[in-house]
Length: 267
Ligand code: GLP
Image 1 (cartoon, protein in one colour):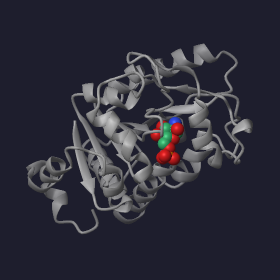
Image 2 (image 1 turned 60 degrees about the vertical axis):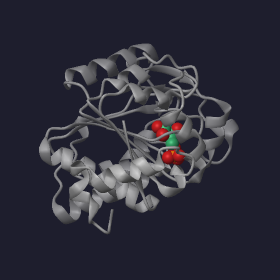
Image 3 (image 1 turned 45 degrees about the horizontal axis):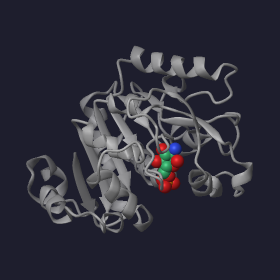
Image 4 (image 1 turned 120 degrees about the horizontal axis):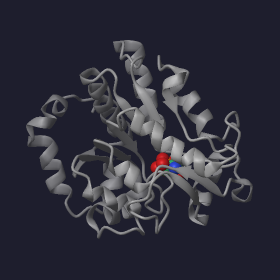
């Protein structure tokens, strides 16, 4: 695992977008795992800008989102289908047939979960999985005590997650969907490359537990410590509780892998 610290949230998101763009350029038919949440809005804004200004081409890419609420119609303004349409799908040249989210309105939800796993497998697996982290340390909607080998399945959301996400779901935690379909921790760990973005001081404590604490099902982001190729991009505010800050800064400043990005004042 590698942790990279950038001065602010804007530059951290821009670096994430640039890493995604480089992956698409290296493999135009990239299978890209996508995430939702407020943190990702900047990343999608940057990807749209790269598409518009540099011709970044999504036309051969396939995407799989991490999760979707159960019981919200796709067209609901609060669904992740609609979030993705607004933030990215309607603004770049992705083929609608090649974008995938779990269907939270499926008549048979367990069958839908199994089908989603089949679709990922049939696409050849996920090349690059984008991730955020919830305030309780979840990745996707893998809430505390999710099995670290779990697959795509239904999951009950915690009261903390309902409270965290309510502002983006109409404001009232009591009106929010209580359950979601989410890729499992095991599904996520099978992606060939994981790329997490966490910004803001509200994520500092949970980020330190996830990255530098013990691997535990109580903080499912900690399972990323097991992943052979995982990059965590954070801003200074989210990094304040990390013990290894100086080492992480030194990695960005000195490792040849980061040379293309070191001198760029935008990153
Ligand atoms: C939701 C998503 C997670 C995401 C989290 C972070 O809970 N299911 O995948 O990481 O939001 O949200 P934010 O970026 O708004 O802090």
